Image (cartoon, rainbow, N blue to C red):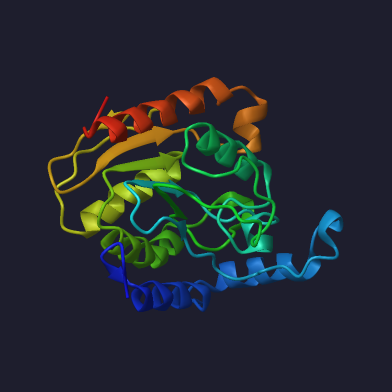
Length: 238
């Protein structure tokens, strides 16, 4: 069976390769240590404790790329941005813009569905201090490239934060594309030459950014509104 131009088996093979990855010994030790120690509030949880694959609509015109699984969010639940405050902010904004069927997602199996959007990250394991090394990001890059290859209808890529922004640009260069040097700026919209999709930059919806006012609801809503409008009118930019 074909889904979005890619077979079910291709997606399953990719997800299996991600989930069983042990390339980065530091990240393996960290993610599994967090899963064993747990946070008191989640003491009754069986943590995922493995790399986290992307999820969403396989025919999506919008690809959203984050940094990495949260130690007690995705590393606990096994789904990107699920179970922490960053996810609360992101899914609420996606719901308001029509990209998600509900505003809050606490765990897998809660019937969350992404509509016209696929969500992933440049790093698949929770890193210490939310800082994957350059080598660790390089090890993860093939997984992002494989997702990009399967997501054949993407027209806009939204990167959340500097590391995701830089990681996506490296991925494009890894495809052999000539990509100009771009500086991360919240709200940046850059139209590449075909076949690369348009690139949008947004501050990461981390607690640090939202609680300090660096990223407000109005700011993230404005980003999604521009994307929604661009996709609805069939153009590559606002």
